[in-house]
Length: 542
Image (cartoon, rainbow, N blue to C red; front, side, top):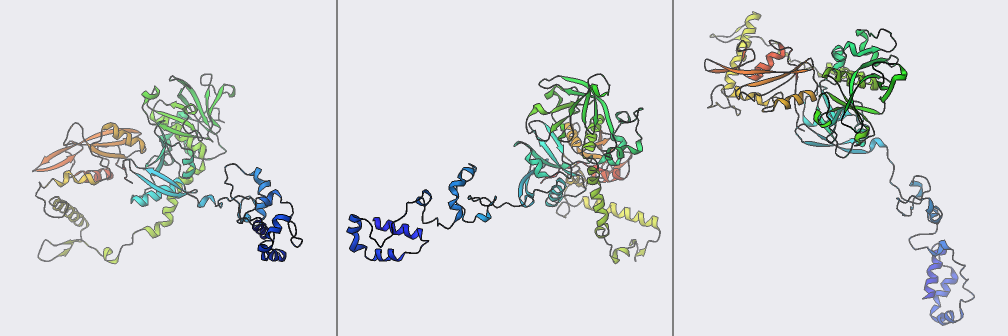
């Protein structure tokens, strides 16, 4: 038994090669077993040297020629406790070099894909797998493609915190994976439209009241209206937003009215009235490591003085409400001014690049994306088939009248057809009372408050509208329209003439056969409305 163990040890020590003396010893071991046992080793078998601590632990699965195994004892103290103690047969693949422990192969961060779940307004969610360098704009385009939506550059990702009651629209250039890493487990992304995201580039005077914008360098405190946005985008200029805001006192439900200043260096409040002297200014928050959020909970939760709440949240703060700077404005216009100026002062020219990118892409693709009319379409002419033979209508006024008449005839013919294309046994006007339910701007029996909420979420820009069922009159409808950041409601009443039902906004002065016809008219004509219908308030289902 001892001789067998010695032979195995000798095999390991000689790297698998058997010494000739050991071969002879093994050949005669059945004759010399009692001599070995009684007298020790024979003279032709060299005595084994004293085994070192490293060699005593050798096994068949650990050959001697692997240097990493020999260094395992010396480097054991340097190994982190979280790594597994697995000998590495390929040390050149390790990081750092020479490490005796297997480690995963390091890959570029851009090739690591992350699971992101996005929710729609109806509560449905979609899971997408994105790389680390994918921006919010790229994710929106991906969702638009997967959901077969119209990409009008108004879609946005919303960072939503339900427990804190906060949300904000991600900027198009922000990396979604980085934003998700700073969110808590209860937070989520929403996919919705926001028409007001870059509206301040189109109508800056509506977003920045003259009394709130000043020049820090000028003594008179005025700023040229023509250079309003240029001063925000130019990093060398120093525009300033000033005015009264309510600030929630930390740890209490009371609010304090303070005069505040928003500059590139941060948000300050004056400790002495409206004084802007440096010794009277106290820094409330910087812009670099913070984001601005809208508070979506009611004013009762925080005992706010008005409904126009917003807050500044540090980028790395997940769920600590103590780090939130809760603020409240006097009206919607001033809140929009503070929040828009915060974005402009923080991101500067990057916002303009985000706004201009879709416009530039549209210009570059316009020669290819424009529909090409065929020869047969270009050769179409108006024809009159009322007589025995057809004739070409040369008079343009008569041609337009014929086209309108043909369109009305098609509508009347369509009203007598059901959705399957067969004649409908229902009343001729039954289709006109339900066809609008297929449109994206119609939202059925939603309450007035819900309509207000949707309009605010999608940006209170001029022309944003939706239609809904009337709560007071079951046969009527309501047009909800936004104008000058105010939400107004107009009732659409049915009226009957010659047995046919029409719809009207102006007491039957202008009548329409269905709501689609009504919307199309007011998209082209203002009529009795304060502005044209421009942006339908929609809710997409992912």
